[in-house]
Amino acid sequence: MSSNIRVRFAPSPTGPLHIGGVRTALYNYLFAAKNGGTFILRIEDTDQSRYVPGAENYIIRSLEWAGLMHTEGVGQGGDFGPYRQSERKEIYRQYAMQLIDSGHAYYAFDTPEELNDMRERMRKQGLPSPQYNAISRQYMKNSETLPREETQIRLDRGDKFVIRIKMPRKEEVKFEDMIRGWVAFQSDQLDDKVIFKSDGMPTYHLANVVDDHLMKISHVIRGEEWLPSTPLHVLLYRYLGWETERPQFAHLPLILRPDGNGKLSKRDGDRLGFPVFPLDWKNEENGDTASGFRERGFFPEPFINMLAFLGWNPGTEQEIFSKQELINAFDISRINKSGARFDFEKAKWYNQQYLKSLSDTTLAGELLPLLKQAGFNHPAGYVKEVCRLFKERVYFLNDFIQEGSYFFQQPAVYDKKIIRKKWNTSIQTIFSDLLATFKSLSQWDAGSIEIVIKALINQKNLKFGDILPVFRVMLCGTLAGPPIFEVAELLGKTETLQRMETFIKLNEA
Ligand code: GLU
Image (cartoon, rainbow, N blue to C red; front, top):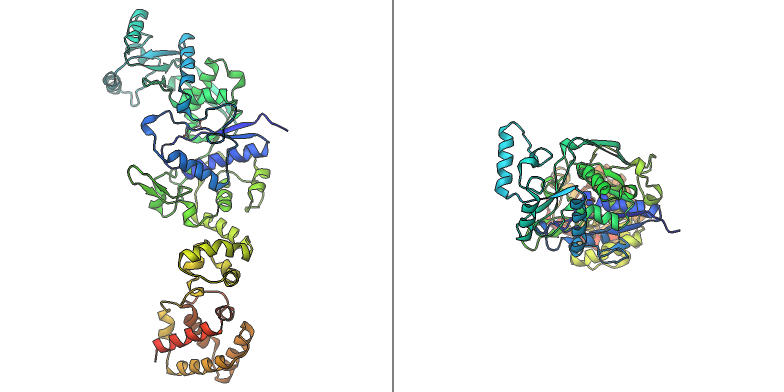
């Protein structure tokens, strides 16, 4: 069944895509997938001054990694292209003209100095945020104030101009948001925004509305920061005669900093110690870098699972969702109005749950290339066993190599406290005996190792605490880890004996 549901993700390529942007893409994706609709990617690059090379490519790679690929739009094509606004330049002018002809927009010729003067004057009159609006436009140089002939002369001789929307003086602009319900703005609080610029390009507002209309977008799902622009968009639909086909709006709540203090910004990431971008980013022009979830060790599945919950919940206790389960459960009416706090510990938890759910074989398959990169060449069977033993203890694949390094190489350092507290001549003798017993052992498995150690403890009248922590530190360097007999079994007899000998030699009491 083909559906009329058409949604778009419409980022501007002004830098790397923030996780807030990925969440917007995700909700659009889920909504389309759930309703048999189409998910479109449109690149909004009308503001040439903010264009950052590499950003568009970054956006597409991020969506690919997160598994949120669009089926129509930039890179995919479709019946409503082109999908990059800079390639649609010619389309917008006629709509700006239509707005002028119908009296809903006008030419403005003010220079930057004149605009500054106007703002200064108004500030002096006690207006803290001066605007170009129904009142101040009367004192400015525009086709509303200039005689018709003068406007024409200026246009004919090529004076610089912008086209501004003519905001009504006093009118309530109302619309129903799918998340917030009825929202009303007073037009005297809104300004005569520029909709078309002197460089022949539309501004975001005009291009966005024209494209949503021409691309038959049924639902606009975007961040809350666009809510204040929506009354202008509503008016543009009305003035262009498209009101009855206007898309429905859904404005997503902000993603907040972990302490709840304000919006999680692009700058927060590396400063607060966690990524706020999906992938590592490098600005080729100025060398700026930022780190990404992928490189931090996140899998795409738990990454989107975590993002889905930043602002939405299924209304049940279930927290772990596959992408298909998210699609089935997703419902715009369950998106919250209030901001969602980002919690990196929770993000790690999602990754951990996902990692734990993978089979040992799959995990080993993921881990092997990383091990190779780190210079280890252990066989797949061995790595699989490491995964079985250690997967409960890691958040990321890299933790296997960092915290579980002793599976792949001799410990480089030993827990000093244990040596100080437990290591002495008599323990050293006991371990030398143990070493000899181990050597004569024909079976090397956790059970046999345990029997030998227990017998030794009984025989010498010792406590487990005298032997086991030392044994663990000999093999692993550290005190935490999976059951030590199993670790010894996996390391194998030769390696275990070698590590014991090394330790004893290094720490001769
Ligand atoms: N280009 C806008 C952005 O970067 C799109 C906003 C919208 O979806 O309407 O977020």
